[in-house]
Length: 103
Image 1 (cartoon, rainbow, N blue to C red):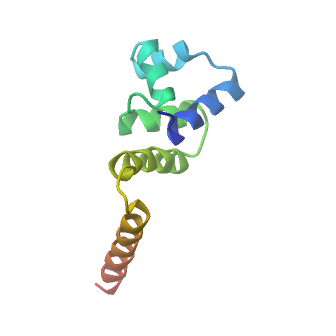
Image 2: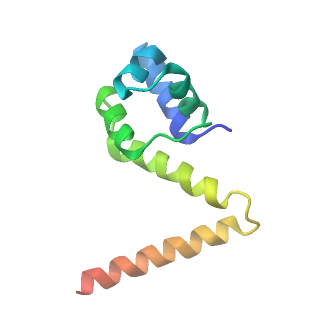
């Protein structure tokens, strides 16, 4: 399964001509595990996203968005009403933010 996060990592790594073994060393994991992260077969940990963003000199917020989107996708992709579920979640987040602002 391909992932938004993994595809972005592969793209950033390719542009900077960094071998997978170098990123795996920075994350203190083996190269095969890093390869699985890029392919979407394994999930990176949140703290690894920060390390990768820093090393690849990219916006951590955008990288975290892709990482989070992959997690959400994994949960609801097979649901018949996936789009409606996302709408409910978005509405709930919006309502919670408005309630916090009023406090």
